[in-house]
Length: 308
Image 1 (cartoon, rainbow, N blue to C red):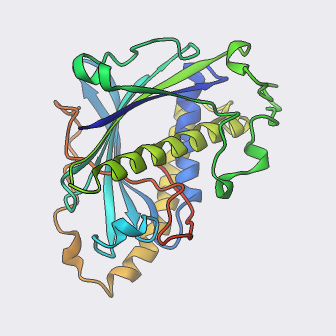
Image 2 (image 1 turned 120 degrees about the horizontal axis):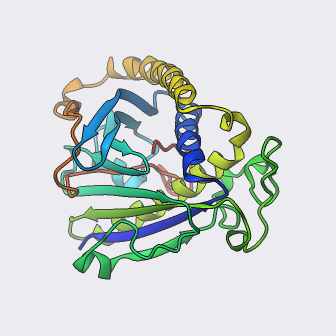
């Protein structure tokens, strides 16, 4: 059975503002969290078009991993390991998929829609039938839900942060009922790992990891508002391209050194596939992982990253 959760994350922004803020946050976060050959490498970033959703942006990324995975996953994967993220951004609607040929029974899909409200739309993404019945709704509070200690930064604590340019913040208790403007990210995450014995553990881990990433990313998007609020879409696309170039350089410098001592066939078949059309089905063979509270061995934590 696929574990389906719908995360609703409110922000003291408008949907139009968040379009810029999200792009800025992803590009900056990916660069900052890339180190020692592990992080997010952008392969494709190009316009796309869909008959239903219209014009958008397609990205394909390789997320390089090894000791950022939990120890029970490391035991069954090659040392040189990456997953593929494909995203179709028809803002304010997006589709994100994670794929890995090495673990074909593992799948994650994320459908997102942004609306200018406080999370009050009961079925924003139009789920039907069993999916609607099985869905678990989880409200994520960017100010009062706690991030893991290794991610905490006082300057990103929205209980205390105030924007110098917009004067928004700090966010008081029950801020969603009193703050204007306000918007909500509705994200339906479907996680499935059909392997006997560890299915429930893996699916719960994926959802826990994704929730932490969403909390951290949305906190940063608002905490960094003074850096991006004056940007246009054209400005942030330019920034995005420059940060992707720098991030790719950081990843490739270390990955090239590592590959010199490894069997390159371990990664055969995991690249490519970068067509720019929206998928016909939203249930592809997809993969995780954006570890946040995971550890490569019991009791050892690693820096997190995320890319969407």
